[in-house]
Amino acid sequence: MFKPNVQFFVPGFSKCGTTTLCSLLGDHPEIYIPEIKEPNFFSMAYHRGWEWYADLFSKAAGRIGGEGSTFYTAKNFEDFAVSKMAEFYPDAKFIFIARNPFTRIESSYREHHHSGHKYGVHVPHDLEQTLRAFPNILDDTSYWSRLEAYRKRFDDQQIHILFFEDLLANQQFELRKCFKFLGADPEVQIENPKRQLNPGSQKRYDTVLMRRIRTSRIASKAWSLIPENRRLLLEDNDLLRKPFAKKIQWPSQTKRFVLGRLAEESAQFLEYAGKPVDYWDLSIPATSARAMV
Image (cartoon, rainbow, N blue to C red; front, side):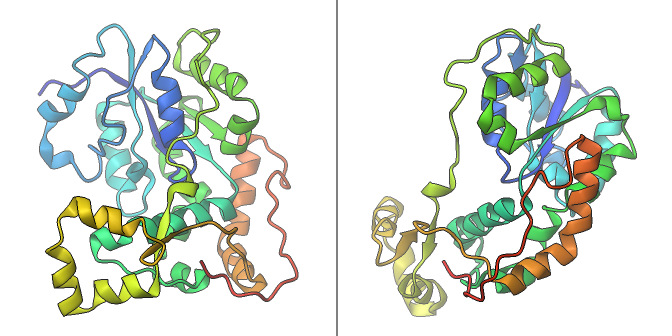
């Protein structure tokens, strides 16, 4: 077995800017991140073997190698991922980037609508129904529980917490802290640090017509006969798939449901990271509007 010299991981949290962060870290001349940003080797791809994983880092010689796979903080995979990383990379460093739980949920909600159909998943348009149907959305927002799985196997000195909101406000300052944590030159200036990859503005959801096409046996079969490139063009039509042009509305009862699961989690996480308890606005507005796309 040839074990690549991986020195750090960005395991979470999903929909919190990990794609952008890894892109920015990879622009540092002393840091190497594979072109496959999320290899998920210690979650879904372990069966591919160490030769496959090592090949991802074949060009990393002399640089600080790292990768970012958010499935490493997915509840169903984290135990396996943490145990394997502790076994093979006990001295690794970890960067976790978090954001306001409500905005993370919104981003995950958009993503479920945008790509769920690829896996035969049809997400409810109602926000609370979605959260109840897909409990992984709340599990992935349980930052403290996800982090605790790592703290049981790694020292706190190996963990760096970054906040999406801080990265947006002062990219160079936050990147310097990351570079210093990883042992790279913190004074390196990254070009275009304000980039934002995989933004929610690019996400779309199925209209009622598109949902009927996908769920009808005859219609879905006819749809599958259309060449893929043509289907993608058709899906850009608002009659079939619409962009998330409007801000997602949160009914007060849905916020209460979420806070029942995440209020204590968020408070513990913020305290650990040295942030005030009110760093995120988790207040409940007075509204009874339905949260629909």
